[in-house]
Length: 231
Image (cartoon, rainbow, N blue to C red; front, side, top):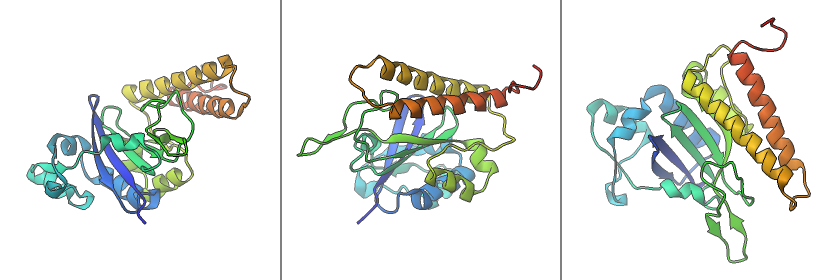
């Protein structure tokens, strides 16, 4: 049985998604996506991609470099909405070409997440009433980190469900803004949980608070304003 997944290229609010049937876990498709980011300009791939039928699709990670070099159309069958159904979509890799980072997302999500980019509505409802929500964000990986680090380091971070940024890397202003917006979303989620009378569990709140704490520490480091440095 295959391990289903999707690769999504996002640019200027437009997404183009390619289905993958086999080995979509981090050490399979994830490793291939990381290597692709190291070798190929994602913006050029996006610009050459043209939606077509399954019979005409010639999308192949191993052949992208040559297609980009020749400036040939890259035909693919559109699967951008596959990420909404986390029962079927087990793993998703989103190349955010505007924020210059890779999103690693995981399926099998049975609880809504108000902070999810893809929404909090179920993408599939099983016959027994079980609802499956869009794939959950598990890690963020700036393209610069991917290109400056080994493939093994990035794949290991994915397998451990954590983000990864090279220790000596400085984020660009757009990347800093993107991280700040992410922290803002986490804070909003905390407020929602605190305001809800329906929740009796503090597990999700704790997760959000930990994400905020890690995000703030990381941004302080980026801006060289860590406590104790005299600034």
